[in-house]
Image (cartoon, rainbow, N blue to C red):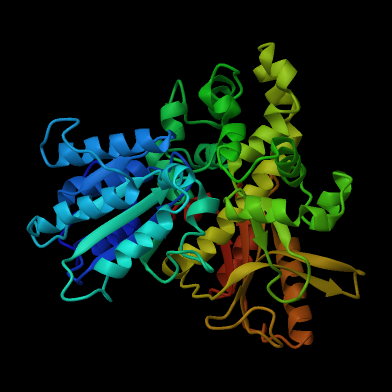
Length: 505
Protein backbone atom coordinates (compact mmCIF):
# COMPACT_ATOMS: atom_id res chain seq x y z
CA UNK A 1 0.00 0.00 0.00
CA UNK A 2 1.56 3.30 -1.08
CA UNK A 3 1.98 6.14 1.40
CA UNK A 4 1.04 8.63 -1.34
CA UNK A 5 -2.69 9.31 -1.10
CA UNK A 6 -4.38 10.58 -4.25
CA UNK A 7 -5.08 14.33 -4.00
CA UNK A 8 -8.75 15.26 -3.77
CA UNK A 9 -8.53 17.49 -6.84
CA UNK A 10 -7.55 14.58 -9.10
CA UNK A 11 -10.78 13.28 -10.66
CA UNK A 12 -10.93 9.53 -11.17
CA UNK A 13 -7.67 7.90 -12.27
CA UNK A 14 -7.62 5.66 -9.18
CA UNK A 15 -5.80 2.83 -10.94
CA UNK A 16 -3.33 5.17 -12.65
CA UNK A 17 -2.55 6.98 -9.41
CA UNK A 18 -2.09 3.68 -7.57
CA UNK A 19 0.41 2.48 -10.19
CA UNK A 20 2.34 5.76 -10.15
CA UNK A 21 2.32 6.03 -6.36
CA UNK A 22 3.53 2.46 -5.93
CA UNK A 23 6.34 3.14 -8.40
CA UNK A 24 7.34 6.44 -6.81
CA UNK A 25 7.20 5.24 -3.20
CA UNK A 26 8.87 1.86 -3.73
CA UNK A 27 11.80 1.30 -1.40
CA UNK A 28 13.67 -0.80 -3.97
CA UNK A 29 17.25 0.41 -4.42
CA UNK A 30 18.70 2.20 -7.40
CA UNK A 31 17.30 4.13 -10.35
CA UNK A 32 13.91 2.91 -11.57
CA UNK A 33 12.38 4.21 -14.80
CA UNK A 34 8.71 4.57 -15.70
CA UNK A 35 7.31 5.42 -19.13
CA UNK A 36 3.93 7.20 -19.15
CA UNK A 37 2.10 8.08 -22.35
CA UNK A 38 -1.29 8.82 -23.82
CA UNK A 39 -3.01 11.20 -26.19
CA UNK A 40 -3.06 14.90 -25.38
CA UNK A 41 -5.64 16.24 -22.95
CA UNK A 42 -5.97 13.02 -20.94
CA UNK A 43 -4.66 14.73 -17.80
CA UNK A 44 -1.19 13.10 -17.78
CA UNK A 45 0.68 16.29 -16.95
CA UNK A 46 -1.72 17.25 -14.18
CA UNK A 47 -1.43 13.77 -12.68
CA UNK A 48 2.38 13.86 -12.76
CA UNK A 49 2.58 17.39 -11.37
CA UNK A 50 0.48 16.33 -8.41
CA UNK A 51 2.63 13.21 -7.97
CA UNK A 52 5.82 15.29 -7.99
CA UNK A 53 4.29 17.65 -5.43
CA UNK A 54 3.32 14.73 -3.21
CA UNK A 55 6.87 13.33 -3.44
CA UNK A 56 8.71 16.64 -3.21
CA UNK A 57 10.09 15.73 -6.61
CA UNK A 58 11.13 17.71 -9.68
CA UNK A 59 8.66 18.06 -12.55
CA UNK A 60 9.94 19.51 -15.82
CA UNK A 61 7.77 20.19 -18.87
CA UNK A 62 9.80 20.19 -22.08
CA UNK A 63 8.95 22.39 -25.06
CA UNK A 64 9.66 22.06 -28.76
CA UNK A 65 12.87 24.11 -28.89
CA UNK A 66 16.51 23.79 -29.85
CA UNK A 67 18.73 21.68 -27.61
CA UNK A 68 20.56 24.66 -26.11
CA UNK A 69 17.28 26.32 -25.12
CA UNK A 70 15.90 23.06 -23.72
CA UNK A 71 19.03 22.63 -21.59
CA UNK A 72 18.74 26.16 -20.20
CA UNK A 73 15.07 25.62 -19.34
CA UNK A 74 15.88 22.34 -17.61
CA UNK A 75 18.73 23.97 -15.68
CA UNK A 76 16.31 26.64 -14.46
CA UNK A 77 13.84 23.96 -13.36
CA UNK A 78 16.57 22.21 -11.38
CA UNK A 79 17.68 25.51 -9.87
CA UNK A 80 14.12 26.32 -8.80
CA UNK A 81 13.77 22.86 -7.24
CA UNK A 82 16.98 23.54 -5.29
CA UNK A 83 15.69 27.00 -4.34
CA UNK A 84 18.43 28.70 -6.31
CA UNK A 85 17.99 31.77 -8.54
CA UNK A 86 17.31 31.34 -12.25
CA UNK A 87 20.56 31.06 -14.21
CA UNK A 88 22.47 29.68 -11.23
CA UNK A 89 23.05 26.39 -13.00
CA UNK A 90 24.35 25.55 -16.45
CA UNK A 91 24.78 22.22 -18.23
CA UNK A 92 27.12 21.44 -21.15
CA UNK A 93 24.88 18.74 -22.61
CA UNK A 94 22.17 16.31 -21.56
CA UNK A 95 24.62 13.76 -20.20
CA UNK A 96 26.06 16.42 -17.90
CA UNK A 97 22.56 17.64 -17.03
CA UNK A 98 21.23 14.24 -15.99
CA UNK A 99 24.42 13.20 -14.19
CA UNK A 100 24.46 16.44 -12.19
CA UNK A 101 20.73 16.42 -11.45
CA UNK A 102 20.66 12.82 -10.25
CA UNK A 103 23.68 13.59 -8.08
CA UNK A 104 21.81 16.53 -6.55
CA UNK A 105 18.76 14.39 -5.98
CA UNK A 106 20.52 11.40 -4.44
CA UNK A 107 22.17 13.71 -1.89
CA UNK A 108 18.72 14.64 -0.64
CA UNK A 109 17.45 12.50 2.19
CA UNK A 110 14.45 10.31 1.48
CA UNK A 111 11.32 12.34 2.26
CA UNK A 112 8.72 10.50 4.32
CA UNK A 113 10.00 7.21 2.98
CA UNK A 114 9.66 8.33 -0.66
CA UNK A 115 12.74 8.34 -2.94
CA UNK A 116 13.66 11.43 -5.01
CA UNK A 117 11.59 11.74 -8.20
CA UNK A 118 12.40 13.37 -11.54
CA UNK A 119 9.65 13.77 -14.16
CA UNK A 120 10.53 14.68 -17.75
CA UNK A 121 7.24 15.53 -19.44
CA UNK A 122 6.88 15.75 -23.24
CA UNK A 123 10.05 13.69 -23.53
CA UNK A 124 9.69 13.28 -27.34
CA UNK A 125 10.52 17.00 -27.76
CA UNK A 126 13.86 16.43 -25.99
CA UNK A 127 14.58 13.16 -27.81
CA UNK A 128 13.94 14.70 -31.23
CA UNK A 129 16.56 17.41 -30.64
CA UNK A 130 19.03 15.09 -28.90
CA UNK A 131 18.94 11.85 -30.86
CA UNK A 132 21.01 9.89 -28.33
CA UNK A 133 19.05 10.91 -25.25
CA UNK A 134 17.55 7.45 -24.61
CA UNK A 135 21.08 6.01 -24.79
CA UNK A 136 22.26 8.61 -22.28
CA UNK A 137 19.48 7.51 -19.94
CA UNK A 138 20.48 3.90 -20.56
CA UNK A 139 23.99 4.71 -19.41
CA UNK A 140 22.62 6.47 -16.35
CA UNK A 141 20.50 3.43 -15.53
CA UNK A 142 23.39 1.03 -15.98
CA UNK A 143 25.40 3.05 -13.43
CA UNK A 144 22.66 3.85 -10.91
CA UNK A 145 20.12 1.10 -11.51
CA UNK A 146 19.60 -2.12 -9.55
CA UNK A 147 22.54 -3.75 -11.33
CA UNK A 148 24.88 -0.85 -10.66
CA UNK A 149 27.97 -1.00 -8.49
CA UNK A 150 27.66 -0.81 -4.72
CA UNK A 151 24.38 -0.05 -2.95
CA UNK A 152 22.61 2.43 -5.26
CA UNK A 153 20.47 5.10 -3.60
CA UNK A 154 16.74 4.85 -4.48
CA UNK A 155 15.88 7.25 -7.31
CA UNK A 156 12.86 7.44 -9.63
CA UNK A 157 12.66 8.80 -13.20
CA UNK A 158 9.41 9.19 -15.17
CA UNK A 159 9.48 9.84 -18.93
CA UNK A 160 6.15 11.09 -20.25
CA UNK A 161 4.87 12.07 -23.68
CA UNK A 162 1.84 12.48 -25.92
CA UNK A 163 3.41 11.07 -29.10
CA UNK A 164 2.22 7.51 -28.49
CA UNK A 165 4.09 6.04 -31.45
CA UNK A 166 7.34 7.39 -29.96
CA UNK A 167 6.71 6.66 -26.29
CA UNK A 168 5.32 3.16 -26.75
CA UNK A 169 8.49 2.20 -28.59
CA UNK A 170 10.97 3.35 -25.94
CA UNK A 171 10.97 0.01 -24.14
CA UNK A 172 10.53 -2.24 -27.18
CA UNK A 173 12.68 -4.19 -29.59
CA UNK A 174 16.30 -3.14 -29.69
CA UNK A 175 15.74 0.35 -28.27
CA UNK A 176 18.22 1.63 -25.70
CA UNK A 177 15.80 1.40 -22.77
CA UNK A 178 14.58 -2.09 -23.58
CA UNK A 179 14.41 -4.12 -20.35
CA UNK A 180 15.02 -1.07 -18.17
CA UNK A 181 11.46 0.05 -17.48
CA UNK A 182 9.85 -0.72 -14.13
CA UNK A 183 6.47 0.69 -15.22
CA UNK A 184 4.81 1.33 -18.58
CA UNK A 185 1.52 3.19 -18.12
CA UNK A 186 -0.85 4.31 -20.87
CA UNK A 187 -3.29 6.98 -19.70
CA UNK A 188 -6.50 6.45 -21.66
CA UNK A 189 -9.70 8.51 -21.97
CA UNK A 190 -12.27 8.04 -19.24
CA UNK A 191 -14.66 5.14 -19.63
CA UNK A 192 -18.31 6.02 -20.22
CA UNK A 193 -19.20 5.91 -16.52
CA UNK A 194 -16.33 8.19 -15.50
CA UNK A 195 -17.05 10.52 -18.43
CA UNK A 196 -20.68 10.91 -17.39
CA UNK A 197 -19.62 11.84 -13.85
CA UNK A 198 -16.88 14.19 -15.11
CA UNK A 199 -19.28 16.09 -17.38
CA UNK A 200 -21.96 15.97 -14.64
CA UNK A 201 -24.69 14.58 -16.88
CA UNK A 202 -27.65 12.97 -15.10
CA UNK A 203 -29.84 11.78 -18.00
CA UNK A 204 -28.55 8.45 -19.35
CA UNK A 205 -29.66 8.93 -22.98
CA UNK A 206 -27.91 12.29 -22.95
CA UNK A 207 -24.78 10.80 -21.42
CA UNK A 208 -24.64 8.07 -24.07
CA UNK A 209 -25.17 10.49 -26.97
CA UNK A 210 -22.56 12.91 -25.65
CA UNK A 211 -20.04 10.11 -25.10
CA UNK A 212 -20.62 8.75 -28.61
CA UNK A 213 -19.83 12.18 -30.09
CA UNK A 214 -17.12 13.49 -27.75
CA UNK A 215 -15.71 10.46 -25.94
CA UNK A 216 -13.97 10.45 -22.60
CA UNK A 217 -11.06 12.84 -23.10
CA UNK A 218 -11.21 15.08 -20.01
CA UNK A 219 -9.37 18.02 -21.59
CA UNK A 220 -12.21 18.57 -24.05
CA UNK A 221 -14.28 20.08 -21.27
CA UNK A 222 -11.78 22.93 -21.03
CA UNK A 223 -11.91 23.46 -24.80
CA UNK A 224 -15.69 23.80 -24.88
CA UNK A 225 -16.87 27.43 -24.76
CA UNK A 226 -19.88 26.19 -22.80
CA UNK A 227 -18.97 23.06 -20.81
CA UNK A 228 -22.49 22.60 -19.43
CA UNK A 229 -24.46 19.93 -21.30
CA UNK A 230 -28.26 20.02 -21.12
CA UNK A 231 -30.17 17.00 -19.87
CA UNK A 232 -31.91 15.92 -23.09
CA UNK A 233 -30.72 14.50 -26.42
CA UNK A 234 -32.00 17.66 -28.13
CA UNK A 235 -29.83 19.71 -25.77
CA UNK A 236 -26.82 17.65 -26.85
CA UNK A 237 -27.55 18.57 -30.47
CA UNK A 238 -27.56 22.25 -29.51
CA UNK A 239 -24.38 21.76 -27.48
CA UNK A 240 -22.61 20.09 -30.42
CA UNK A 241 -23.70 22.92 -32.74
CA UNK A 242 -22.27 25.55 -30.40
CA UNK A 243 -19.15 23.80 -29.13
CA UNK A 244 -17.97 21.50 -31.93
CA UNK A 245 -19.55 22.43 -35.27
CA UNK A 246 -18.74 26.12 -35.02
CA UNK A 247 -15.50 27.01 -36.87
CA UNK A 248 -14.36 29.36 -34.11
CA UNK A 249 -14.65 26.64 -31.44
CA UNK A 250 -11.36 24.92 -30.48
CA UNK A 251 -12.91 21.48 -30.96
CA UNK A 252 -13.87 22.21 -34.58
CA UNK A 253 -10.46 21.20 -35.94
CA UNK A 254 -9.27 19.14 -32.98
CA UNK A 255 -9.31 15.91 -34.99
CA UNK A 256 -6.76 17.24 -37.48
CA UNK A 257 -4.54 18.69 -34.78
CA UNK A 258 -4.45 15.61 -32.60
CA UNK A 259 -3.51 13.34 -35.52
CA UNK A 260 -0.91 15.52 -37.16
CA UNK A 261 0.88 16.45 -33.94
CA UNK A 262 2.37 12.95 -33.85
CA UNK A 263 5.89 13.46 -35.28
CA UNK A 264 5.83 10.17 -37.22
CA UNK A 265 2.67 11.02 -39.15
CA UNK A 266 3.93 13.14 -42.03
CA UNK A 267 1.74 12.61 -45.12
CA UNK A 268 -1.27 14.49 -43.75
CA UNK A 269 -3.49 13.98 -46.79
CA UNK A 270 -3.01 10.20 -46.93
CA UNK A 271 -3.51 9.66 -43.20
CA UNK A 272 -6.64 11.82 -43.21
CA UNK A 273 -8.00 9.88 -46.18
CA UNK A 274 -7.45 6.57 -44.40
CA UNK A 275 -9.24 7.82 -41.28
CA UNK A 276 -12.14 9.13 -43.37
CA UNK A 277 -12.57 5.80 -45.16
CA UNK A 278 -12.43 3.80 -41.93
CA UNK A 279 -14.83 6.19 -40.16
CA UNK A 280 -17.30 5.65 -43.02
CA UNK A 281 -17.34 1.93 -42.23
CA UNK A 282 -14.65 0.23 -44.32
CA UNK A 283 -12.87 -2.19 -42.02
CA UNK A 284 -10.51 -4.33 -44.10
CA UNK A 285 -7.14 -3.25 -45.55
CA UNK A 286 -8.21 -4.45 -49.01
CA UNK A 287 -11.36 -2.33 -49.10
CA UNK A 288 -9.56 0.66 -47.61
CA UNK A 289 -6.87 0.40 -50.28
CA UNK A 290 -9.51 -0.06 -53.00
CA UNK A 291 -11.31 3.17 -52.11
CA UNK A 292 -8.00 5.03 -52.04
CA UNK A 293 -6.95 3.36 -55.33
CA UNK A 294 -3.87 1.86 -53.71
CA UNK A 295 -2.78 -1.74 -53.10
CA UNK A 296 -3.56 -2.81 -49.56
CA UNK A 297 0.11 -3.70 -49.05
CA UNK A 298 1.11 -0.09 -49.73
CA UNK A 299 -0.89 1.03 -46.69
CA UNK A 300 0.62 -1.42 -44.20
CA UNK A 301 2.94 1.18 -42.69
CA UNK A 302 0.29 3.89 -42.46
CA UNK A 303 -2.29 1.59 -40.86
CA UNK A 304 0.29 0.33 -38.37
CA UNK A 305 1.31 3.90 -37.54
CA UNK A 306 -2.28 5.02 -36.94
CA UNK A 307 -2.79 1.96 -34.76
CA UNK A 308 0.38 2.51 -32.72
CA UNK A 309 -0.53 6.19 -32.33
CA UNK A 310 -3.87 5.19 -30.86
CA UNK A 311 -6.21 6.39 -33.62
CA UNK A 312 -7.26 3.02 -35.04
CA UNK A 313 -8.20 -0.27 -33.41
CA UNK A 314 -7.39 -3.59 -35.06
CA UNK A 315 -9.64 -6.41 -33.81
CA UNK A 316 -9.03 -10.05 -34.66
CA UNK A 317 -11.88 -12.52 -35.06
CA UNK A 318 -12.05 -14.53 -31.83
CA UNK A 319 -12.76 -17.87 -33.49
CA UNK A 320 -11.33 -17.85 -37.00
CA UNK A 321 -8.12 -16.82 -38.72
CA UNK A 322 -9.27 -14.03 -41.00
CA UNK A 323 -8.41 -10.46 -41.82
CA UNK A 324 -8.73 -8.08 -38.88
CA UNK A 325 -11.51 -5.53 -38.48
CA UNK A 326 -10.15 -1.98 -38.40
CA UNK A 327 -12.10 0.85 -36.76
CA UNK A 328 -11.61 4.45 -35.63
CA UNK A 329 -11.43 4.45 -31.86
CA UNK A 330 -11.79 8.18 -31.15
CA UNK A 331 -15.29 9.72 -31.28
CA UNK A 332 -14.06 13.23 -32.11
CA UNK A 333 -12.08 11.94 -35.10
CA UNK A 334 -15.08 9.90 -36.24
CA UNK A 335 -17.43 12.91 -35.92
CA UNK A 336 -14.98 15.10 -37.80
CA UNK A 337 -14.71 12.80 -40.81
CA UNK A 338 -18.41 11.93 -40.97
CA UNK A 339 -19.99 15.32 -40.26
CA UNK A 340 -17.57 18.24 -39.92
CA UNK A 341 -15.38 17.68 -42.98
CA UNK A 342 -18.11 16.71 -45.51
CA UNK A 343 -20.18 19.75 -44.52
CA UNK A 344 -17.36 22.18 -43.84
CA UNK A 345 -18.61 24.82 -46.29
CA UNK A 346 -22.06 24.81 -44.67
CA UNK A 347 -20.57 24.95 -41.20
CA UNK A 348 -18.35 27.88 -42.12
CA UNK A 349 -21.51 29.60 -43.37
CA UNK A 350 -23.09 29.15 -39.93
CA UNK A 351 -25.56 26.38 -40.82
CA UNK A 352 -24.61 23.96 -38.03
CA UNK A 353 -28.20 23.06 -37.07
CA UNK A 354 -29.13 22.31 -40.66
CA UNK A 355 -26.02 20.13 -41.02
CA UNK A 356 -26.91 18.24 -37.86
CA UNK A 357 -30.43 17.56 -39.10
CA UNK A 358 -29.23 16.39 -42.52
CA UNK A 359 -26.59 14.09 -41.03
CA UNK A 360 -29.00 12.38 -38.62
CA UNK A 361 -28.95 9.06 -40.49
CA UNK A 362 -25.14 9.07 -40.66
CA UNK A 363 -24.90 9.83 -36.95
CA UNK A 364 -27.33 7.03 -36.12
CA UNK A 365 -25.76 4.32 -38.29
CA UNK A 366 -22.07 5.25 -38.36
CA UNK A 367 -21.61 6.76 -34.90
CA UNK A 368 -24.26 5.73 -32.38
CA UNK A 369 -24.51 2.10 -33.51
CA UNK A 370 -20.77 1.31 -33.47
CA UNK A 371 -20.26 3.28 -30.25
CA UNK A 372 -23.02 1.39 -28.45
CA UNK A 373 -21.41 -1.90 -29.48
CA UNK A 374 -18.13 -0.59 -28.03
CA UNK A 375 -19.79 0.34 -24.72
CA UNK A 376 -21.55 -3.02 -24.54
CA UNK A 377 -18.24 -4.85 -25.00
CA UNK A 378 -16.60 -2.57 -22.42
CA UNK A 379 -19.36 -3.43 -19.93
CA UNK A 380 -18.80 -7.14 -20.50
CA UNK A 381 -15.06 -6.79 -19.95
CA UNK A 382 -15.07 -4.38 -17.01
CA UNK A 383 -18.38 -4.51 -15.20
CA UNK A 384 -20.38 -7.63 -16.05
CA UNK A 385 -18.79 -9.78 -13.35
CA UNK A 386 -19.87 -7.37 -10.60
CA UNK A 387 -23.16 -6.23 -12.16
CA UNK A 388 -24.50 -9.56 -13.44
CA UNK A 389 -22.22 -12.36 -12.26
CA UNK A 390 -20.98 -12.80 -15.84
CA UNK A 391 -17.38 -13.91 -15.43
CA UNK A 392 -15.75 -14.20 -18.86
CA UNK A 393 -12.40 -14.32 -20.58
CA UNK A 394 -11.33 -12.69 -23.85
CA UNK A 395 -14.15 -10.65 -25.42
CA UNK A 396 -14.44 -9.56 -29.04
CA UNK A 397 -16.37 -10.22 -32.25
CA UNK A 398 -16.82 -13.00 -34.76
CA UNK A 399 -18.82 -14.11 -37.80
CA UNK A 400 -20.56 -17.48 -37.63
CA UNK A 401 -21.24 -19.16 -41.02
CA UNK A 402 -24.76 -20.48 -41.52
CA UNK A 403 -25.75 -22.87 -44.33
CA UNK A 404 -29.45 -22.56 -43.50
CA UNK A 405 -29.53 -18.82 -44.13
CA UNK A 406 -26.65 -18.88 -46.64
CA UNK A 407 -24.88 -16.07 -44.84
CA UNK A 408 -22.58 -15.32 -41.96
CA UNK A 409 -24.11 -14.14 -38.69
CA UNK A 410 -22.13 -11.20 -37.33
CA UNK A 411 -21.85 -11.39 -33.55
CA UNK A 412 -21.37 -8.02 -31.86
CA UNK A 413 -20.04 -9.43 -28.59
CA UNK A 414 -18.58 -12.86 -28.03
CA UNK A 415 -16.79 -13.91 -24.85
CA UNK A 416 -14.71 -17.00 -24.37
CA UNK A 417 -14.56 -18.78 -21.03
CA UNK A 418 -11.85 -17.59 -18.69
CA UNK A 419 -8.47 -18.97 -19.64
CA UNK A 420 -9.56 -19.97 -23.16
CA UNK A 421 -7.33 -18.91 -26.04
CA UNK A 422 -8.78 -17.27 -29.16
CA UNK A 423 -8.79 -19.10 -32.49
CA UNK A 424 -8.26 -22.54 -30.98
CA UNK A 425 -10.27 -25.63 -31.88
CA UNK A 426 -13.32 -26.07 -29.69
CA UNK A 427 -12.74 -22.91 -27.65
CA UNK A 428 -15.38 -22.77 -24.86
CA UNK A 429 -17.80 -19.85 -25.19
CA UNK A 430 -19.28 -18.08 -22.17
CA UNK A 431 -21.38 -15.27 -23.66
CA UNK A 432 -23.04 -14.28 -26.96
CA UNK A 433 -24.50 -10.79 -27.22
CA UNK A 434 -26.13 -8.36 -29.63
CA UNK A 435 -26.29 -4.57 -29.28
CA UNK A 436 -29.12 -2.39 -30.64
CA UNK A 437 -28.93 1.39 -30.41
CA UNK A 438 -31.98 2.30 -32.50
CA UNK A 439 -35.40 3.27 -31.14
CA UNK A 440 -37.01 -0.08 -31.89
CA UNK A 441 -36.90 -2.29 -28.80
CA UNK A 442 -35.33 -5.73 -29.33
CA UNK A 443 -37.42 -8.75 -28.46
CA UNK A 444 -37.84 -12.47 -28.99
CA UNK A 445 -36.72 -12.36 -32.63
CA UNK A 446 -33.28 -11.20 -31.53
CA UNK A 447 -33.19 -13.81 -28.76
CA UNK A 448 -34.09 -16.54 -31.24
CA UNK A 449 -31.25 -15.39 -33.49
CA UNK A 450 -28.79 -15.66 -30.59
CA UNK A 451 -30.10 -19.13 -29.74
CA UNK A 452 -29.63 -20.13 -33.38
CA UNK A 453 -26.06 -18.84 -33.33
CA UNK A 454 -25.38 -20.73 -30.12
CA UNK A 455 -26.58 -23.95 -31.75
CA UNK A 456 -24.38 -23.28 -34.80
CA UNK A 457 -21.34 -22.79 -32.57
CA UNK A 458 -22.09 -25.99 -30.67
CA UNK A 459 -22.52 -27.91 -33.92
CA UNK A 460 -19.17 -26.61 -35.17
CA UNK A 461 -17.37 -28.10 -32.17
CA UNK A 462 -17.32 -25.21 -29.71
CA UNK A 463 -18.48 -25.71 -26.14
CA UNK A 464 -21.31 -23.15 -26.30
CA UNK A 465 -24.26 -25.09 -24.87
CA UNK A 466 -24.16 -23.22 -21.56
CA UNK A 467 -23.20 -19.81 -23.00
CA UNK A 468 -25.36 -17.01 -21.65
CA UNK A 469 -27.18 -14.81 -24.15
CA UNK A 470 -27.44 -11.06 -23.95
CA UNK A 471 -29.29 -8.20 -25.60
CA UNK A 472 -28.10 -4.60 -25.21
CA UNK A 473 -30.47 -1.75 -25.97
CA UNK A 474 -30.66 2.03 -25.59
CA UNK A 475 -34.47 2.02 -25.69
CA UNK A 476 -35.57 -0.91 -23.51
CA UNK A 477 -36.98 -4.32 -24.42
CA UNK A 478 -40.31 -5.83 -25.44
CA UNK A 479 -42.50 -7.41 -22.77
CA UNK A 480 -41.90 -10.80 -24.38
CA UNK A 481 -38.12 -10.41 -24.07
CA UNK A 482 -38.45 -9.34 -20.44
CA UNK A 483 -40.59 -12.39 -19.70
CA UNK A 484 -38.13 -14.72 -21.45
CA UNK A 485 -35.23 -13.29 -19.47
CA UNK A 486 -37.14 -13.73 -16.21
CA UNK A 487 -37.92 -17.36 -17.02
CA UNK A 488 -34.31 -18.13 -18.04
CA UNK A 489 -32.96 -18.03 -14.47
CA UNK A 490 -30.04 -15.85 -15.51
CA UNK A 491 -29.36 -17.53 -18.84
CA UNK A 492 -30.51 -14.38 -20.69
CA UNK A 493 -29.21 -10.91 -19.85
CA UNK A 494 -31.07 -7.77 -20.92
CA UNK A 495 -28.75 -4.81 -20.53
CA UNK A 496 -30.07 -1.27 -20.91
CA UNK A 497 -28.44 2.09 -20.31
CA UNK A 498 -29.16 1.93 -16.58
CA UNK A 499 -27.09 -1.25 -16.29
CA UNK A 500 -24.37 0.03 -18.62
CA UNK A 501 -23.99 3.13 -16.44
CA UNK A 502 -24.19 1.25 -13.15
CA UNK A 503 -27.60 2.67 -12.21
CA UNK A 504 -29.70 -0.50 -12.36
CA UNK A 505 -31.94 -1.40 -9.39
